[in-house]
Length: 274
Image (cartoon, rainbow, N blue to C red; front, side, top):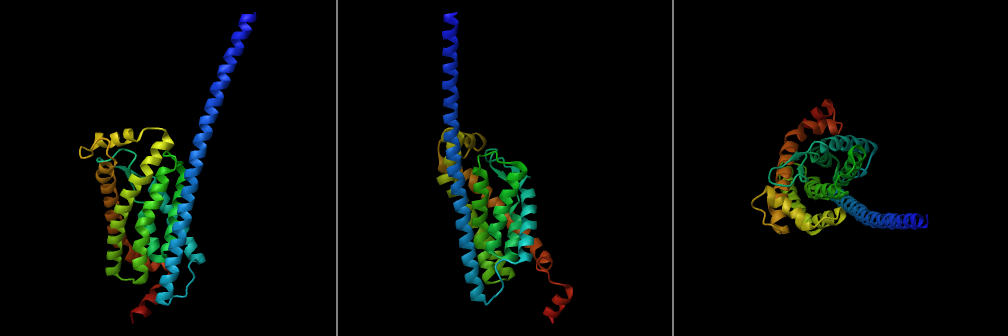
């Protein structure tokens, strides 16, 4: 009886040790995720403030006295964000990159809305899009994918919208989309190499080499164990394809949609053309 009691106490002690070990591991993981989320929120706030200040400067230079945010703008921010969040759910796996890198066209309504309402509205739409996507689907990448989508999306729409805000013409829109695509490709590639891939490996508790190995398996141009090779041949082409395709579609649909978005009636358009 005494032997059985001692054995039971030993088992209970071992179970408690295992429980507390798991609890400690969970607490560490939560702490790391909280830190990552705080960084995410700091990036959101910083990009919004940058966009807001740039838009204020552009409006002063152009002599525009309209408020940065109006009820009409906020309504369209909600509409475009919702459409963008839905588009974000439809992802295309690219054959030259691991399956966790996917192409989506959620930037199309945001770029259209940003051209119409300015960079501050664009950053807000990026944030609302991510928020709605998390509500609908949650995160399968410990928020790393969502941070990547937000930051890389802003690297595209901010320079593009800033150029178009200063001078609204077809030529400036083409230049804006071209510059936005270049910055998207460069920033997205560098951001993955410097921060996102190491953060992904840390949060998932897996070696970075294992993630890089996924790239070399699907893309023969990726050198095993080389993060530079990985981002150049997997991440950069994906960002380039996204920037070009979003730019082309936006250029095709923005002009017909612009009068509707801005609330210009047929009568007002005729008066402006006289």
